[in-house]
Length: 386
Image 1 (cartoon, one colour):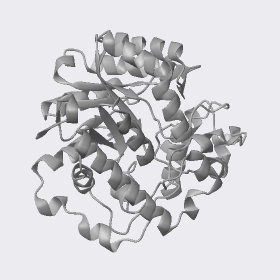
Image 2: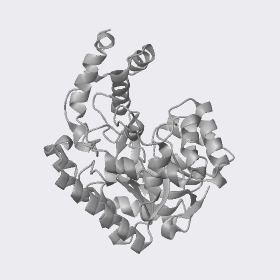
Image 3: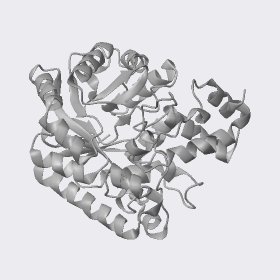
Image 4: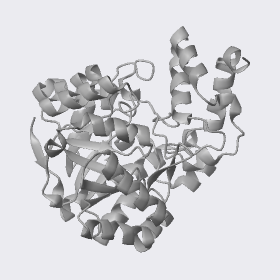
């Protein structure tokens, strides 16, 4: 595994990192195996944002005896209320959640403290100029965090944050769909809500492309290392359902790692098999990594597709929206008894949606959540009626 320097932090990180969002909810032995195999093969950068106690406990167990071999990116601003993930800038809630993270991971310090999910310029201003930043600076002074990062999907927010000089590293969503084809749109959440993602034009895509190039160039000039999240676009780029010629994990990782200032790609994996597929990048040759023909030949879009990131939460009806849409997507291809069983086991179903629209306002990817819940209600109606 080749190491790269994470910008001005000076941290040496493996080119392939580990996103834990999809593996942490798996049985403990699966998580243990993934963490052990990752470290064995030189993966040393681990991103972890979950605020729920049970997931933090699971990660703590998986890291027992291994803490000194990894760089942990933990998130400030992700808290658990009534068992649900919430994003907040309330300093009291955030401080309690951060200390809980340290305790459950059995560590005295988080290497990179990520200001969690900041896309909107208004949120950026509140986060960097108010009590939330005062808390972050206090935790840094106390030695409970070493460096300050920020996670974002929007180049405009990334640019503004880097320009303040307060941020040491940025976690940013990078893949061909986002960079080349303008999946997200450079609008903020409010504008995307007014103009649905499916209505974005090629002009919108070009604007996204310019903004992202500006962001990368700025990070190079300011020596800000980037960790690339969502390199597979939640698996959509690997799917024959989405593309006639799907990308491979190696191609997606190579694309992310060839963006300027990129230090590590952080794919999410669910098990050892998916981790092994990502680790193939280490020994892949140039032909295996090349995705230029796929980018050139395809005319496709992922607009409005769920990335299963859970940033749409909390839901007033307690619906696990990401998991629900994941099951809907899977059942649309092939309804199985296992999918029915998983859907039936959830505490709230798609039919519980009250169509408040809060989730669509929060979603960074323009997903029409309400219509997806209606789709799920029809798809699983025999279960919903039980």
